[in-house]
Length: 65
Image (cartoon, rainbow, N blue to C red; front, side, top):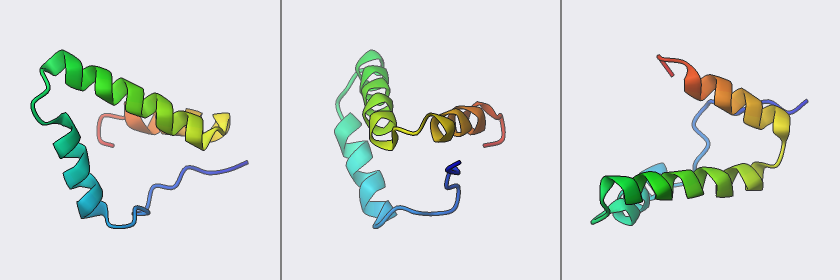
């Protein structure tokens, strides 16, 4: 079973965060929410492993995550 990686694992994380913010720039709340939903689905498809995705859903649902 594959495990969800929770330690820092993004190359150039600051650059990615800046790109993420720039992608949302100028969008209204609904548009931003829709973009986030599409991004989640694209990344979930890339991951492809249902066990990892279930772990991610559980982790994201935690209040202190």
